[in-house]
Image (tube, rainbow, N blue to C red; front, side, top):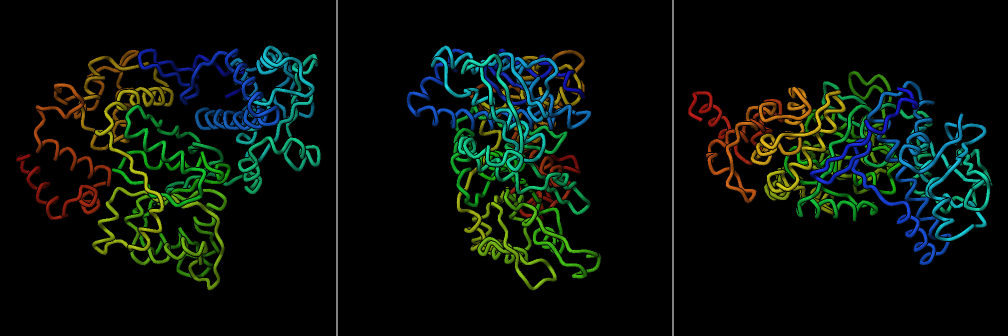
Length: 544
């Protein structure tokens, strides 16, 4: 795709009924420029020019980074140059600027010239002419966008500004090394904890590790809320008080480098919240690495986590860093940590305590600098009490615990989340499906969602794929969702659904999530393997 092909109509999605606006897949709001000018005036009054510049610059860095992430993950670009040039055009479409003809990016040798700037205009209206350039937020936006798009820290500085009486605004973007001493006076206004960390990453970061036959799922991201290229993240919707509390806690603890345990049923969004924590932390510019501890054998898991030396075992043909080292400067998520074998648990505890790892086959330890997040669908407290999980490791992981409620406990989120997922699926599948019929929405609200957000995501994609027109109807939903009986209201489970039927659907859904592995499905459901086997035999005989 080329930058010139950007169409704001395809990036903007408005749910008039739900009151939700999304731009490039992310929730957005439409604000009056004059109100933003008033806010600028209040910031200057309360914090002075330096304080206001710092706040607006850092806000701009975050906004630009998120826009770049949306562009990277959702659109296939013909070249890096097209991605870079899309930034200025994107912010023109959003109403921030008007770019001079022929200019595309502040990284060009001549920089980028703006014929108009909403920020300079509002500064003149509310504060009068300034002695220095005043497009602080726009400089931050360009810095955040170019940092994410290029993979290295870029600082964009304004040297001419309409707000101080110049004919145009002019921006120049360079790396810290290229700026040299000229950057020092501007550096305090940027969020150094984000931009500086990106300088420690390779100029050309390695692509995310793909899932292998061993079940490894390691993903790297450069900026907040990132997802692997081509995989739009599941939206985080929190209309319900329970989910709002969970996300509020996640945001509050994100800046603190503590270990966090995320608990909740499979499909409840634990990895998505882990990405939120990573993105809101000082490590946001570092990698986000996730490993599924349940999907790898004990010997391979130790090697994946801690690395190995050449010749340490059959097939170890070269030295290899583990995921603790790969997550240096970033975040490591230990997904399904409750399934970690006992032998690895002891070594994991030592790594967390000492902040050092020892590669398989080596005698020396290596320092690691990664924040650890852990996720599980098990009751680790009960497992620790029963001796199935190391008690000391449990307390080491559970410095802060965040429980994510299942979808059945957050009924207010079902339809808003379904609409957000519909927008994502329709873009990915290139299907012009704009919403659901009332009948389809009724079925979505009545269903029990034993598979939580993951099940809802699959159901929405099913509906988008089968929809004949611009809306998804009841018949486009999966059979089990479409067959839910009407409820009497109040957000309760359907009265006409029998307890045995609910149990059967939950069991079959758990088996599907675990690829038919009965032991893992039984553990998730909190029942014995023999009980699960007995129920499955009854279903097979048609007694269910």
